[in-house]
Length: 403
Image (cartoon, rainbow, N blue to C red; front, side):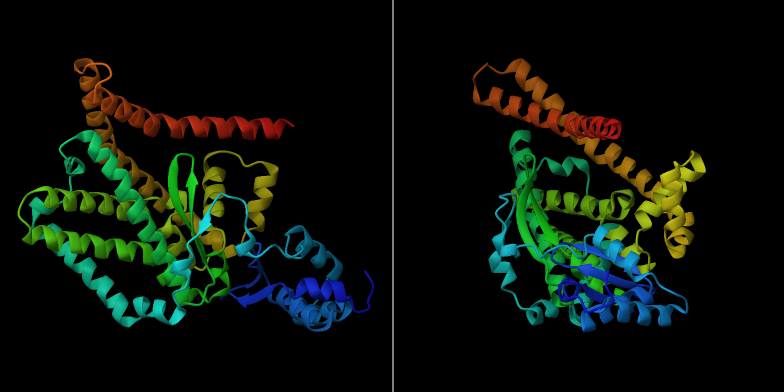
């Protein structure tokens, strides 16, 4: 590396964003979704490189900030290895992967319009909805959700179809609210519809949020649960005034699945749910998930040499928080097990029993027979597919480790 100005290096460095994150500086490539935390001398090095294109000048300024000599060439090699100095990628509009489709009409909403949903008035409405939900569920036991509420149509088979429709609709609403919250704080996010296997999913790309100050990120992480609370509040209010019937049963199903979704978000810390992102941000951590996992494994088993080095290299705050954050992981796993035993398992068992009864008593080729067959296949897929996929991924990881 020469000491002269490098125009090519300066051009590549210009693609990086530099933002202060409270305790560290974040270097990012929004187009690649790659972000790394560095100490202040690293940020000084990059900004100088963007300004002058001179490695020597960048090294001198970074060394002055660090109070000791800095190896500029080594730092550039680190940036290159992290992918931060890679060539520019195609714009999102040029994506031809076929895996997802951008929802352009929602991306036409201006940041100013989105901000109205997440200002003081907006969060007052969300808080009021939460208070209302808690008050009603405490005062009206008859309105509390139960797994039997899932059967809101005359046929279990039709109810299962209803679950899928409700899941798609409210999944879109949840992710769209994350996107709108990101839009409100100026994050140029992307909202897409895609799929995972046989399921339609919605994707909200908020990777650039790390360039936003931490105290402005909380609302983005809470947005999905906030709109879920509003949905539950509206459904409860309608159930209080609508007489028993199909509409009331539908509202009961909506309440059940949205309450389960909200509880799941808070319980699924080990799965890096919205609540995990919120807590990790509030605790000012960078990789709390991985650090917690390594800390727990270190207490129960023995870390490999690479894992021990990774844990030692993690941030001091991440290591401090991980010592007690593991307790939240355990508590979250306990709640997930409770949800499975009290909601999902009874649902699946009753559905399976219904399907088997229909198969045994129905005439082969009849509508009832095919309905029962489809429902039975659905139950088998929901119960059997996750462990099969986990087993397959474990085999692939083992095979890759042996190569």
